[in-house]
Length: 246
Length: 370
Image (cartoon, rainbow over all chains, first blue to last red; front, side, top):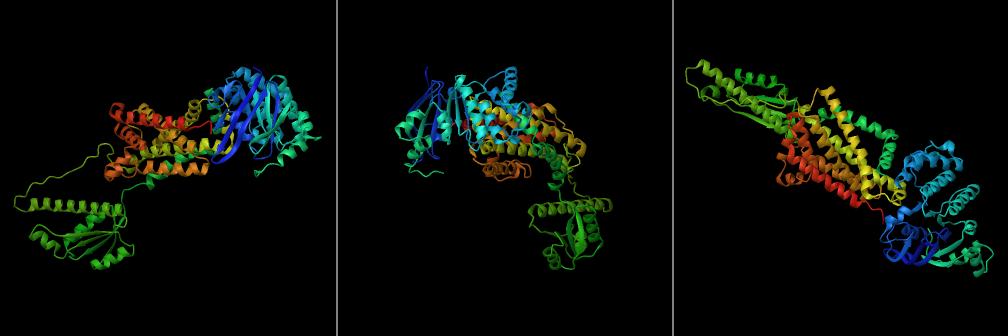
């Protein structure tokens, strides 16, 4: 299987509002796929459908070889997810959060303990193992959330604006983590508003008003839109949006 | 998998100081205060006597009434209207008017008349007060009859005297009756409110999203939520039972095993209801009001304060659907009468039905996908 994610006319309507409008695309295995779009373009809704958190109104899709409408629970076994809003347990300690989610994915206690130490060590967090998550700085929280999302070695990881509100140095470190994960063969599906981050992706798609308006490598997109930066490409497309951003 | 989820619930509960305090302080306060406040025994009713006879016998009746301990003689009114005025002024609750010629009639015809007028603004108090007064007067007339039998040569009619013997609460101690019911109330409140606020708080904070994206099964999730409240229920019940031994010297007559068995099922029911409410609510505020609504119905329709048998017909029908009613019956029966499980089989079956219903509903109404 070379394809990790594919969708065919995937649509989500909330009443008369079409949040995601007939999107069709595919993501290859091991790819870092950037999912771009202005606020309110429908990125998060699309991602939630792919993760089995939201039922598609119409259209079809497959994630990790399973149907998103009929086999959402099978998909969930094979993916990791990091939501836009930090959603680990703030009242639990760092290791307790890792242990909880690893346990849910069926990992065994000794393996969890060993891997927890290993990962905290490589993140330079070893001393924070017993810290309650609420007292960590935002950048560290995001790195922890990412580590939890890939702890069980999923086939695909979905990251919804993982670096929002994070300082440039931490952002850089964060992308190093993403690259490490991709090297291990994890497909990365990431949304972002930072165009420098878009350049780090193998391929990117740009959503405008619920539709995918452009999809290619950053290099090809720049050529196609006669732009020298991704910023410019994004601006040309996003300007066409009629939907109000929030 | 469920092990990790239960472990997480306990870690969260154990580091929530407020919740821990609630589990111990709430039962203590309820058991210390409520039996006294919820006491419906009437004492110290303010009595105004209108004695129009001023005879030896009217004097004896007055003394008998005031010696009973239920009434506090506030004044002797010269007239019935003056007595009514003191009721209006809130100085008296009940009037006993002794007719003129009370003593003379008593000797001449064997009957004499008194009038009782009670302020029924508080219906319960008025009703009970006049009932007490009637029984004191009846007692008085029997005394007179007995005296007559000794002094006169007339053969007197034999009469039957009812002396009630209260089997399960010989001293008619109201606390004894209320304490088991209050334990039920406590279990209901804690096991109802805490789960109702639980899932919805995960929704508000956003953590539910991270769980919904895992392959966790719906039943696993719901059971992991239920089991901690189940254990809290047992702890609260144990605390209550120990307190009632220390404070009221009240030990259950029936077996502890029966009490715990029924409590276990009951807590599951109420927690299940709480989780259902939590599943349908979007915010904690909403969950709070909805569960409050259900709690009020459960409590008022349970027979805690008003016996089910004295409710109007339609209200009795509602109590059939109230799990608290059955558990209240069980607790009172086991605690005071020593009923065994064999006596309480219908309740067992009904409660099991409720448990399956609410928890099944909780599993179904929990949605991992919107």
